[in-house]
Image (cartoon, rainbow, N blue to C red):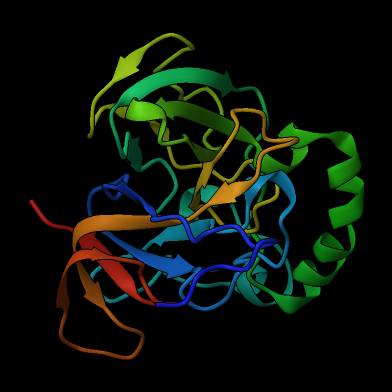
Amino acid sequence: MSRPRANQTPARSPVLLALPFAGRWRAGNSPARRVPSHGTDLLGERYAIDFTGVDDRGRTAAHRDWGSYFGTEPPERFFAFGRPILAPAAGVVVDVHDGEIDHVARRSQLSLLPYLLGQASRLRRGVGAIAGNYVIIALAESAGYVALVHLRAGSLRVRAGDTVQIGHPLADCGNSGNSTQPHVHVQIMDSPDLSIARGLPVAFRRYREWPAGATHPEHREIGIPGEGAIVEALA
């Protein structure tokens, strides 16, 4: 059996979470596709994953109009917006942030380009401009910290010091921070401070997964959803 070199860090087992929602959601920026999953190690994002709520047809919204192709759209149009976000593990809430607005959504290339060019400016404005509204939970047995970000303004149902169990309502899905469409961003970190945190591997328990393009789901006891897969928690 090979051993890690002296200057290498042994691989760490992933922290296991429950999916933090009910219903069907599509995985994006999955660490199953690449690491760093979001193209950066900043803000503890190395193994982060995004989930966007969909209907049983896999759509993120019921219809499109001119704004879908040439401009912006209200976040309320999207199925994810306002859906409950649940605690994916037991632990203690150590940090919350609220007060960031929910932006308009952007599906059109015309509206995405100027938004992407503003990334550096948002990063200079600090964590809130990137993460938006968020909840950070210290996991039991020093397993790390889980952050759930881009939450809906005014929807947070917990505060620092609260003890939560799996399935405890935390907030609603929103479109705050560095987000172009309502979704929830989930990551495990070694610190509760997003500005200095390093990302840790994550995996999820008990869910159905429809791989991208598949018509039938596969049962996962433990896994990382593939890029573009639709997932649904098992009871």
